[in-house]
Image 1 (cartoon, rainbow, N blue to C red):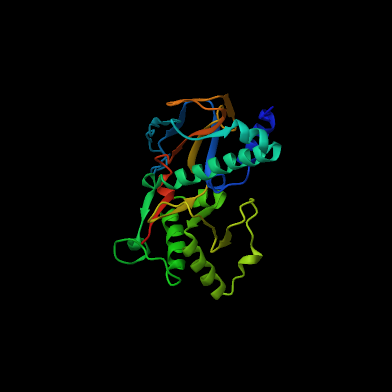
Image 2: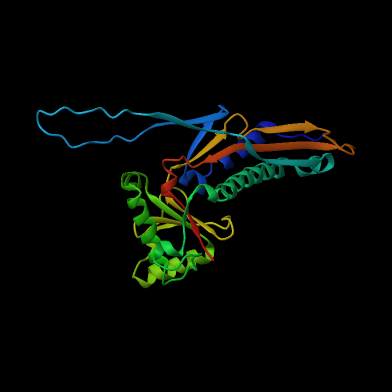
Length: 282
C-alpha cells in the first residue's frame, strides 16, 4: 500500500521555506492573514523662525494612509503517480517537499525584482554620464556605489541608511567585475563574509553587495534595506494540500496531488520609494 507522509512532508517544506533568502534580507516581511496591509503616515514636522515675545502659529498635521491587497500567488502543484509513490518511499517524498520549498522561495525572489517599476530610476545620468542605461564596467563600479549613497543622502535617507544598511543586487557578470575591482584596490572579499546567512555577498564601500540570476532583464536593484514591504499570507505559506485521485479535464488521475503555494504582495510605500532604486543597465 502506498503511503504518503503528510506531516513529515509539511515539516520538510516549512524547513526549506525558513532558509535564509535574499528577499528576507532586503524586505520588511509581514506574515499576516489580513488581506489588506495599511501604512498610515503623517506630514513631516516643520519649523519657522521666531522672535522673542512674538506670537507663533501652529502647523497642522495631516494624516494619510496607503494600503495594498495581498492578492498575488505562486503555486506549485505536483502529481505523484500511485505506482511511483509505492516504489519511491520516504526519502523521495522528502526530496520533493524540499524542492517545493526551494521553488517557492526562488519564485518570491523573481517576483521581487519584477517590481522594479515601483522604484526610483537610476541611470547613466545619475553617475555623471549621458542619459541612458549603464554599461557596468570595472571603471564605473565605484561610481554606481557612490551615486546610490549620494542619492539616498539627498533624499534625506541618511538615518535609515545608517540604521538599516544599503544593498545592491548585481547580475553575476557584474558581481564578477565588482570583485575584480575590489581586489584591485587591495580588498580581500574572503575576509568579509556577510553574517546574515546569505553566503553570496560581501560588504564593500559601506554597501552590502549581492548577486542574483533572477533580476529582471536590464535592471539591478539597490537601496536601503527593509523598506520594500512584502506581505505574505501566513495561512497558506508552508501548507501542503494532498488530494487522492485528483480530477483533471480528462478525468481522474491515479495518484496523489500535492499542492503548495505562497500568497504575497510587494509594495514600495510613497515616502520611502525614493530610497529604493531601479538601476537601468545595458
